[in-house]
Length: 391
Ligand code: CMC
Image (cartoon, rainbow, N blue to C red; front, side, top):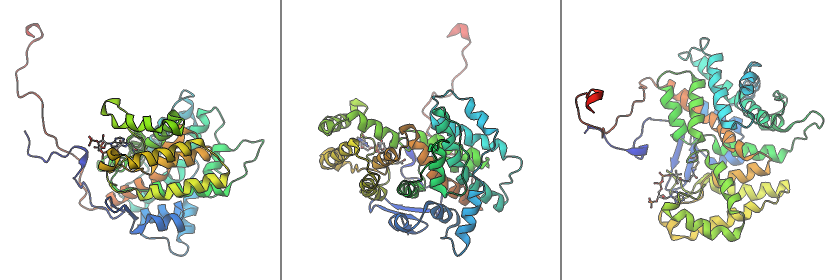
């Protein structure tokens, strides 16, 4: 019983109004604040996109430099945060460490943070964008037993992250501009995607007035699952398992068998039922980046064969299942030397821009309500308690 619309998975419920990102799933259109993703991918950079998502407009003269300066000067994490990492077993998943470390920022910035003050909200957003790469790299370095590196603020956002990931004292890291550019592009593509599961989670937690760092930690938790951000890790594991282009046919058959419990990871999308515009950009980029970095990865051959096989198979055609953004992103991350367990963390760094943009928008909405879905109750009707000896 109940008087509510039953909409499992929120297939047709708009829980909010938003001016951040527009998606037309049938036409394969993705706009950040009105700008097509293809144009941003070609001409912009991740920090400019983050500015756009947060502020609604591209930065004018001097505004980008100020934003970059602000982000750069909040990249350090509290020294005591290192102790959090040391509490983890060495092989803890970096997503678990990141989720915990970002959540713990709520303790560092709580009493001091007035979320009713727009300037303080903006500062929290900047801190999150600034600190995510530091925390992510710390999680990775801890997981391989290496000392944590401090952010080098004379580098730009993506180079700084790569430096924190890979630098060893005896061999000063030569920054590869191709790698930094590729990373920047991936971050642009992953920066926002309107009301996906993790962003909706950030908004739901945000709707209670919770601390923004706690909201983003909840977003990281939602992102981790293989149906969402965890797909990029799952794609690479799947490609490695398939191992060779000649095994692709068997994998496709298995994915079509509902009893197998196996899906083609990196295929299908809740909203895109034609193609994922991010996948188109990333596919092209994947070939280019691997070429430029001189990396020959047999998994790319497996991926291409799998894509072709699925695109002509009636099962995938009828269900409008196309490669999504994560089908190729893992191959690029792998070529950049980023380990598989870090793929979803990479997604989290980029999506932080979107999460904070939505959190800010939510707090600028005067009639915002606490998120409180209803249900269709399917349990027992009213009944009387039975004492233990009478059951
Ligand atoms: N392989 C095989 N069959 C699939 C797949 C797949 N990857 N995706 C969907 N299907 C089938 C599904 O079994 C169902 O078949 P039927 O109509 O016969 O029951 C039909 O296609 C519709 O699927 P659905 O699960 O109802 O669709 P959804 O909108 O609820 O799920 C999805 C979307 C992305 C969760 C799903 O396509 C999936 O699990 N894909 C693999 C995981 C993945 O790549 N996720 C990343 C998404 S993009 C990045 C992000 O959002 O983070």
